[in-house]
Image 1 (spheres, rainbow, N blue to C red):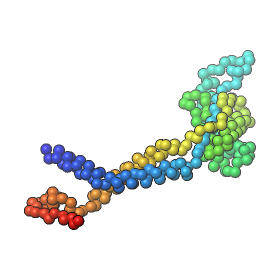
Image 2: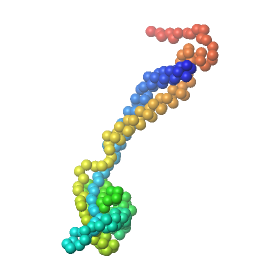
Image 3: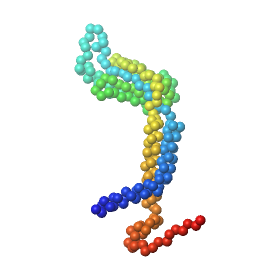
Length: 231
């Protein structure tokens, strides 16, 4: 019984606090939310992603008079995918890309723009490049793909990389997600506003009702002096 009463009192206090500190919470929510919106729309640059797709496959199956691709050949190709994924971002490849595209950056900076991924247990490799310039992202992705294919032949003495899709010019940025960031800013502002209102209420030690006097001192209130408002 006492636990139910305590819960009801707690909820009533929270509701009272929300009503009393409503404007504080509203102002904090608006300030943080609008601030996050301005930052994401005015100060965050668009980032575009261009992606090319290649496949690691045995060339002998395409040649006339040769045996078809076997399971062992397929297994070997899948295993080579991991090695090829690493080769794509080696300095040997990146230095040629920088020279070909005349990029004013180091290989480490270029490597940060490139992501190489592969579908699980397949021969497919995706090479994606992110940059603020969509045309540059496309050019780098296609350059990496071509140079990588050439390096596989020259360095690994294998001709088993085929280009499925060249990178296209991206029309829509992949980041930032401005509506999501703005909504997140207002949500954070609401939480922060509630926390600040709750903290202000906890730190407020003033007596506001006869019930508080009775609760704190354990004695009944014999009388009270009403507030006189002069005209």
